[in-house]
Image (cartoon, rainbow, N blue to C red):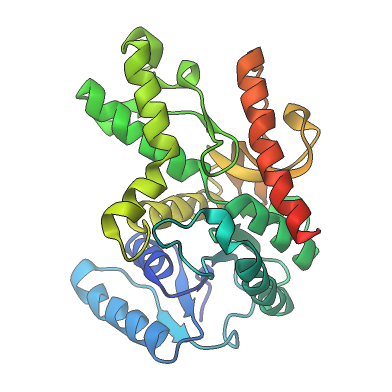
Length: 310
């Protein structure tokens, strides 16, 4: 492969394969799709490669059942792990997915020691911690995808309520990925106007609640899987900001060392993403109740870390 960026996507299920689709459509680099199931990554990569003449993207796509060929990847998106079934919490997946993510990270680090890891596997915040410990990478090269998805869900619901373009709406979500996330309406805007000036509190509260349960809502509708279009698009937005050194500020799971009063845990905060990976954590002053909600979110992540003993 030539001088193009090289992106490895681990897991060729719905999230991984759809991430490969968005990555190819944006021509962000050559793509390796890795999965243990024989034929699946090869078939999906071939199918995407055959769409290239129609859609006009010049990138190479290859499916693999092991990691040989992924050497010197710039970005590695890790989606491997069991998906949620109805009635399962993200935390039910904890130990199984921790084992899977550990094995993946070992393979990736050996071949791409300078890569930036974007973790998508659930339970997200805990899997980031597993990947950080296992990889030995500095914290700026292990980042979790959660906040981009959560804020996109909130933006979607706000735009619908306001009957405006989604492009006009920004949303601000902190905290862990799940029921304890902390959407902040006062930092969420429509064309620069704070949302609380445009919608009544009860409507905002309903949107905040729907955002926190956004994943479960889709799981209960699909019945045989979980969301994948928006989660994969979110991982690709992060990848694009890194590979193009855009320095976009996006909410991501980052390893905190004192920021927001939290130490030694992955929690969702506003992050500047550029060529080095996580280049800056943006700290804002929180109101007392927001700080309490964020601490509660961090405590929920800490519980999982304690269960894993890392």
